[in-house]
Image (tube, rainbow over all chains, first blue to last red; front, side, top):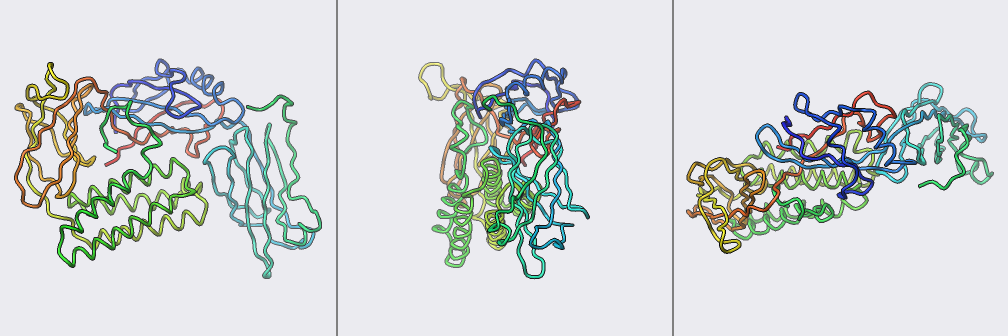
Length: 190
Length: 252
């Protein structure tokens, strides 16, 4: 639908509540609402979202037929690149790690996405928010079920190896993830 | 949930499953008024729409709201004898659940929800709605003297919707004729930016009558629409984006 006039645009970490007024930083171009000062808008969003906090943008606008519309959208800001490599477990070093569907979900928000591992078991998520990221995958080889189940909290661009483990590995105390990430700040996270 | 209403009276949490409940109530009424064959068809549809509600447990709120809106719109379009549009609306929900956004729904819930939407779709495709009936709608401004009492005819250009489906705009005398579905129905009149009124009636097939709607002038009528942040297709906005674009999506 084509928008003619913006009534209000607000930013908040609580749905439906009045927060920062973004309306002065937007204008209507070709029927859509575009930020005229992208840096200022992103600054306010980054300030509000803090450490991986989901935020809402709520907007109200008049369309070209004179009707008023309102709606909201929830999102997080993403800052880091996460590179994951699925690896075979000690109990089954020959386990194939290519073409495995992986479910990636972000804690504290209804965000989930699917990736497929490449020939070497790698996949990327870019960008990811400053929030715990859960990795889930399942593979069956020669009737043996193996699971990847790991949570990684990136504090910068992060690489991690996630093992596809079976019951024997778990009983043997094999760790499911080995990540290389910049140290997280010691301050309490919002 | 009316598509037009005062914003201040629209708590988001109350929207969930409102339309499913309404659609179920309408089907119940239609089943009661229909022939034996139609009653059995309707009973089957009622069963299917009842099945959608419990499968919403564990579904993220924003997806639930989309499904709830979509099912409500499909039910309303079907009642207006726009079955093709109704089925397309349900197809769009299945595509949503099959796509990237559906991946945020855990697999058992996604499968169950998709299955119940398919069942509801089959049911609507196989069932005939109660007949439409011609109705005159007269829209008035509120009188200055007593709150809610009828004042002057509203004049031309007032938007009239029934069950969230746009049915036209009033003539200079503030009236409009339209074919509306039988059964319980809510009709809204909106004159932007500040006048809104609604009337709930139960129409019988073949009935001829006039519905009067009085619009209060102190409202902020607005239509709930899907808002999209174009630079965040996975709901993750990259740091330092080169643009930030907000779009409202057309609902019907």
